[in-house]
Length: 175
Image (tube, rainbow, N blue to C red; front, top):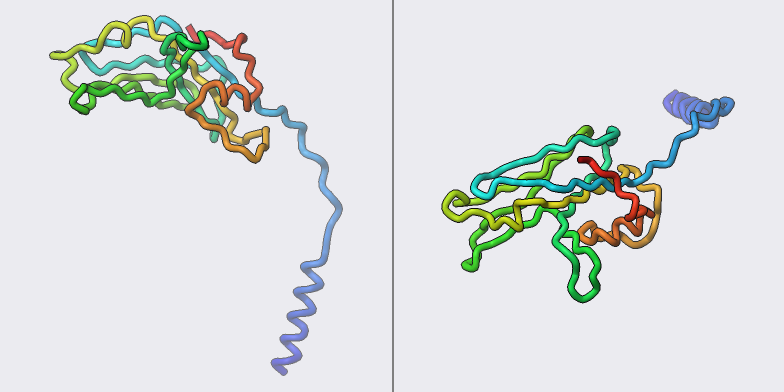
């Protein structure tokens, strides 16, 4: 009796697993996600205390998107190409102790760029690190539409914009 029940169970399992219905209607066409770059100019931080700046995105980012932030560090003297330093970016005293760090976090609506430091009231951050700073924010789609065998270093701004075909001359200003 057990063998007959097992046989019927196997036949029923095969019969039900091979059933197929008609294909459903196609879903709505999606638009390919595109990476974007935003630039923020004339950002000023406190030289003597931890400080932060918020910037709202002009359009909402989506769950799963990745946000990368870079700080302008001047032109490269050899190539005259702009140097973009990825955040977080830490600066240290000569003895190796942490002086201050640029950091960031983000939501779907905004990005917060901030400084954290130690003993800043006694040893302020130099003006060229806190006055008129320029930042670039790269929003990379959570679903990467460009499939390549080579991974991209998120530390290299130029590698990121090349991979995502971003027109570097058409950066959107946030302020």
